[in-house]
Length: 131
Image (cartoon, rainbow, N blue to C red; front, side):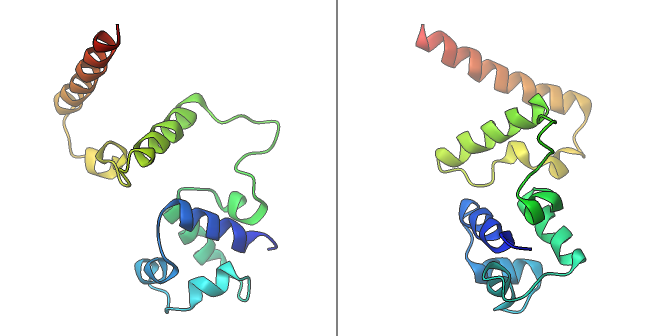
């Protein structure tokens, strides 16, 4: 699993976590996550899945450094979400509400439409101000 440690370290740093924080969040003992980053210990398959879910990447990415095979492209909506997340993080917002999908599942269709309309209004207002 050469390279796994570096990918884990990069993902952790991009997510603005400390090793101890990830260990605590995932229920590891204090030093376990650090051992994964230093490649002193190999995570189990279950742990790889848990880490991939935590960082929102595939197990394939953790193991091989590729999210998709070279012949495939990321779907446009995934690229858009990645750009949106990067924009939020660039502006100091680490966990934007708009990306907490699990919290949106309880909203009605009219609530979702209302939120979408608010976003559209702000975007239109911003575009009008730029003109």
